[in-house]
Image 1 (spheres, rainbow, N blue to C red):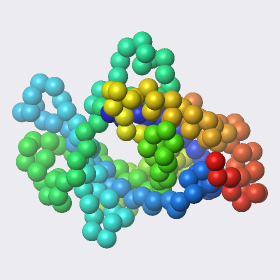
Image 2: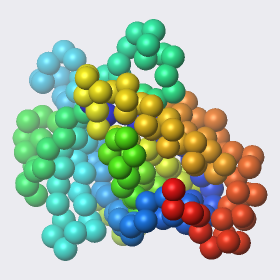
Image 3: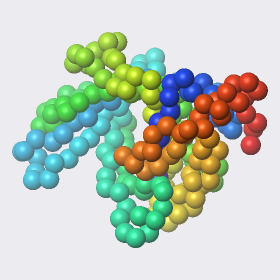
Image 4: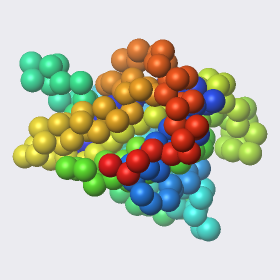
Length: 217
């Protein structure tokens, strides 16, 4: 399982967010350049459509591939009352022939994206990862070098942590607590429930930039 919240931030404030995350983490950021292909099953693969995402890490000397399937979100009154989405995720490393393999199975390319940015990893009651990326679309098939921003001037922030049926409540609490550090810069909520940019972001970013970084907490 995975616990996740998302938010958006204006590109002009990303440097301030990076300074804050660096102060909280204390270790260098991880650079990201991920080519993401979304595949959907054809009619010959069953009555219920399925979707998988193939992630190619272009930052590695030899690009590496990962297959990722995101399942349904946890349901019920308890799930509705928390601000963090809890969902099932299956992920596995794959060879460079994975795209051809899924095409052979009957999957079709639905869309592809290029995510460029950085990530920080934290251990704060859970293994929390914060990614900040510009989401770009390809004008031509697989043409990552010609990708253009989907929403110019806006970047996506995602906070995730692995969980299980036994400990997801503790992980949810850890993420909620961690998100309080970022609240002056952005609002984080369940995916597809965006509140837009935060009014206090400009002032918070100016404060972070003026003192050169946040304190290690």
